[in-house]
Image (cartoon, rainbow, N blue to C red):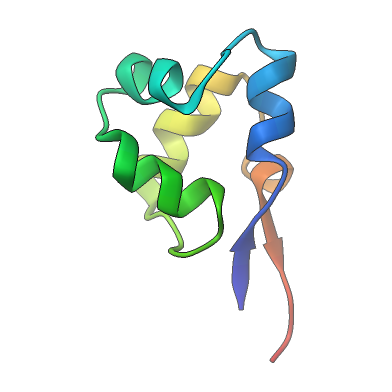
Length: 68
């Protein structure tokens, strides 16, 4: 299972004070971003691309694979 992780921490490190700020920056609804941040839903590749570009990180920084 692929899970999201560390998005909140990376957001803070990159100067995004809130999920609303990041959502606006990448053109996404705040509610949808919240699902990714809280690991309620796994983002697709296009969203991963936007997140990594905005957060200046690699996919492995925000995604984690866990068997099962």
